[in-house]
Length: 155
Image 1: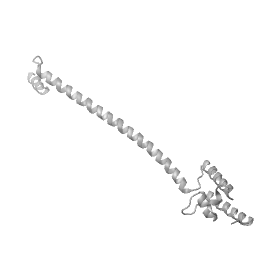
Image 2: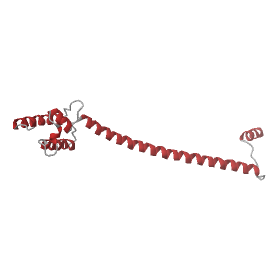
Image 3: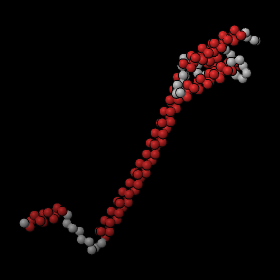
């Protein structure tokens, strides 16, 4: 079915008005800032935006304007902005998690080494005590209590 020049102009005006609304961030419920929503808002068949169809130049203009806004840091679709923000936050949290896991691994290794050193030192002390008691040449000194009473009784 052919449309008249007046109908085509009217459709283009509706498409441009819907395009401006979407790019300002006025996204309808359940919609996105995309061609499907643009076609629905302008009440035009979506296939008219593709290939050699009559409104393909308007699709290209919409995508160009949308890309320019995104490059400028302005994302008209609040859901898309939220997705972008959440992806960045997710990446930061993954980095923090990796750093935490590395710190835990390092601390676990340190704890293992410290326990091994303490066990080795304990074994050395036990060995030295056994060696000291086994040697007959070693004379045990009296404890500090008995030497204090001996010194006190001499005076």
